[in-house]
Image (cartoon, rainbow, N blue to C red; front, side, top):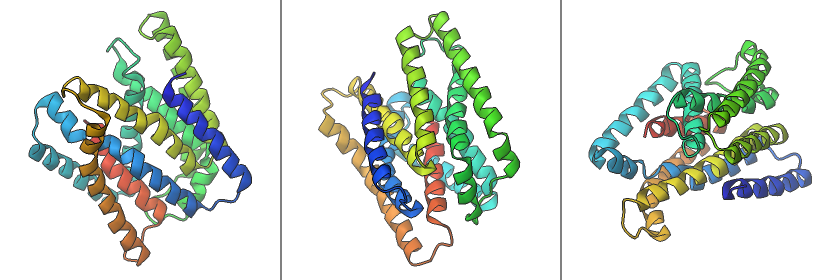
Length: 289
């Protein structure tokens, strides 16, 4: 078991006790708590995209921010024009991004790796939706921005079982081909079981936040630190945190502005819609770094 899974299991144990003691935690309290953890752990993992890109490609900050802003504004426009298209595009891009960040350190061969990354991410999102389909439908009923088709919800069980079997077989084949180490296979299977339990036990927002913070964001920041340490001499943890701060603070100021507009009814969107749209507009350009 690695350090990220250990932190994740500690979080599971803590939250299980919280929900046992307070079973009727409102959706707004869940959203506020999730927004806090995503802001202070999730956002920083993408806060040095400009630095990572500069070391990988040589693109300077000005060009990077122009490209990033174009992606951000274009996707925001897609949300305005066709929210359902934006939602599904966000889910598809996120699926690949999550699978890539999970498996890149483990898979040796680059053959078919893009399809494997996508399959892992499809399983993650499908399982999250499958175990919380009823809650998802209730959230969508209160949404003025996007809708969830009942026909889509009806095929979730088939998608979940198909993606589960496919991913299991692919991981076994990769191990037999010595592309994936046996200990990594057991680690991945344990991770998948743990995630399925999380999505089954906890509400939709809480389950996603747990994965996003502990198994994605903190893990990615750890690998980002290793990457930059190999290129920046004597990079300490303190210096790394300082690199994270400028863009993190800038984004948090944006969050404060959104909350101000929401609290004074300048926005007609719900808190859940604001959270989904803001995360998606940041995630889409981040996924391409």
